[in-house]
Amino acid sequence: MEHVPSYYAATVNPHDAWPQLNDDIQCDVCIIGGGFTGLSSALFLTEAGYDVVVLEAAKIGFGASGRNGGQVVNSYSRDIDVIEKRYGKESAQLLGGMMFEGAAVIRDRIDRYAISCDYRHGAIFAALNRRQLAHLKQQHKRWQQYGNHQLELLDELGIRRKIASERYVGGLLDYSGGHLHPLNLALGEAEAIRRHGGRIYEESEVTAVRYGVPHLIRTLKGSVTAKYVIFAGNAYLAPHLEPRLARKSLPCGSQIIATEPLSADKALSLLPDNHCVEDCNYLLDYYRLTADRRLLYGGGVTYGARTPGDIDGLIRPKLLKTFPQLDGIKFDYAWSGNFLLTLSRMPQVGRLENGVFYMQGDSGHGVTWTHLAGKLVCEALKGEPKRFDAFARLPHAPFPGGRRLRIPLTALGAAWYALRDRLGV
Image 1 (tube, rainbow, N blue to C red):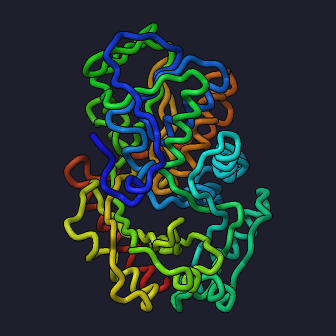
Image 2 (image 1 turned 135 degrees about the vertical axis):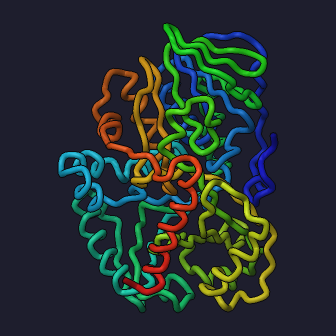
């Protein structure tokens, strides 16, 4: 199964393929899923000396990791003020101390392994109304309290200097965030795993897992016997493989386009400092420039991981509302990808059996969170579970309505928040 025909697949770095598993093998740790969660875990573990096998049903980076907006955005899908209100000060302190770590892991990987993925620094949260700007001002204070001093508040004039759009009343610029080519990052990390002796198998869908001592993981043409198992499939993990993980999460789709290449003058006129942007709406828009000066623009959510028939019709009105000066622009690429949503919008982390771990439900903040997650599960396997358990203790309720009603009820709730965004309340 090849990558979807996205801008990323069309501009991927040359790389060697990985084989299919056609044998019965053994290892210390078997990781199910070859996206950022699995790759980050595998790289930390191979660096620590573990014998690691990664099983990917399609291609490395096939899912959200190779299709997302490429934005390196700090924190979680719920910020630290919500975490403190819901889970208490102790949880807020532990999670707050980690919320900028995923981006640091990414920068370290890029530098240490010389991964060519077009990394650029700077991420802007753009406020569409005064209520959102007030929230960003509070976020600025909270993030500084947790050690992020690479922040700049932008008033209306300041954000106009950063974004050639009249939509915004201000924003928050995080210089420790940024943007990159996510598929090339994934492939670079996979190559680093190979260099450390890790084994990666593509086109090796897991068909069954038998828990025991050790655990047995079966694929279509082979098997892996392992002391530890890590579920890292997120929205692309087959529900029947581990129903306990499917009950408290909901796959959702997001749509992205990439325009035709812009002239250097046009590109710099839109985003003079080449920062990436996301607005502060519940159903947010996000965009950035690519290395070859295309505008990559995404937004909207389809609940239940449906792929819309007309991505152009969904994204073009959003893009032109932000940049009316691009009227008539051609879209060279349009694609959809799935991410995994949780009811709390916080990641789900924990253990299913003795030696069986899972991390899922990034809820739209997967690029940074997944890189932190790999570090945390490595710590847990090494006997240092405190930070992993800070996430594992968070309660997670199932979506209301069961299997039949959870999608329409979730969409109804999202429509309510979207209405509030439009009204600015």
